[in-house]
Length: 241
Image 1 (tube, helix red, strand yellow):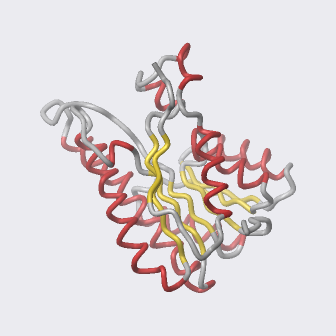
Image 2 (tube, rainbow, N blue to C red):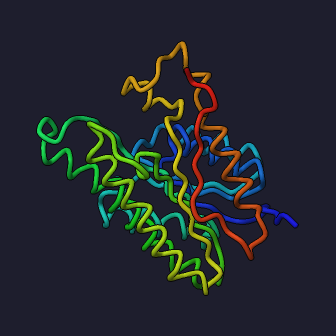
Image 3 (cartoon, rainbow, N blue to C red):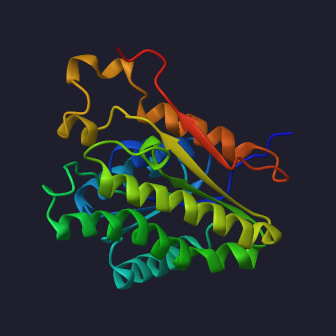
């Protein structure tokens, strides 16, 4: 039997827009209390007000997840306001594309610092809360670029391949604590970021997977009986051409 999510507490990173925002809305609609984490306070304030109207407890914290100190302060704030988490959605990430020789080494490193180290910092800060509860869910958003490399995606692919390795290793560490750790590998999603990077065209974005589609999948996955978990799953547009 599917489990109810009502009354649980979730932390969502990169919550200001895209998949993170859609997931936060979907969780709140299910009666989940939500902790929002992103870099843009104005966007977080607006989303927090929207979610509170759904009758759940909401808190937000501003942080750049590439900073261990900022992450630890943000998670401490969310914990103080909402209590310990049951669910962590590691969604925050950045993307830039260019050849190995074109991309500045600092920009290349920045992708690793945010996409990989940021996921690690947030997970490390939240994990003790789940262990203390002897249960919970961590869902890390990787990418199809984390399954296969492509020209100009060396930094992005390296970071997203690493997220999958981190996910699989952590899953083995904490499964005896009844904590499920999964990686999702979506293809191009119709988000603001994808439009900004010209990965999709605005007049064609309805053919691509929408943030709300991924959020719907996440909700369904979280509802699966706790004795089973999804190791990895890919979301790919049926006919984007």
